[in-house]
Image 1 (cartoon, rainbow, N blue to C red):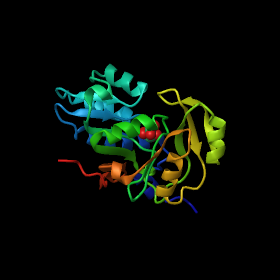
Image 2: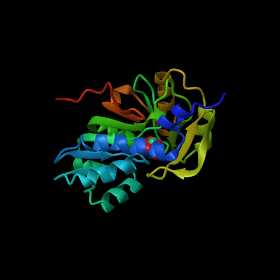
Image 3: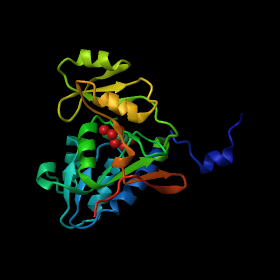
Length: 236
Ligand code: 5RP
């Protein structure tokens, strides 16, 4: 069937990298405005977060204390003049902002495309509010494989055998020097899969984030930035 030219003009295909980058930037800019003077801020990892950091730096907020989830984020944040400290020096965070590989309607996330899933999960859990920023193609009806995994090096072949349908992502390492793998088996019920992955010896962490971890998802697309509430309630 011939493409509808008018529709194509108004709604560029999402595989157009420039369009997708525009969406990522739009979501990141909305999230940057949620940060206020003096906040303790968790910074995720990835190309969407790479739009967040300059938007945050441009606000010239006072007294920000940032925590980075990867060396790449730490480096870019510092280059832009943001103050980056260790999580344990900062303690509880007011807000953490990060991208995701997939978001489903219930608020489950798949994360770890950038290999920083364990740090990202720790930082998200340390934050009163966890805000997820994505371009529209990350919003899916049903989560699909792969699910990223961080694995201990020791006995990794046994861990992969126990997992089944999982393989190493080449020589990719996490920021903490562990191996990164992807689980390609069926996801089915994410609660069950998350439990199975968590209880497999050798799995340091998996990339399934529960809806209870997420305060808000900002999904940017052709019609603007949709704000979807998550299940995480901010204490106090
Ligand atoms: C890194 C992640 C990223 O947030 C996720 O892969 C999305 O990345 P991008 O913003 O580049 O699309 O989980 O470990």
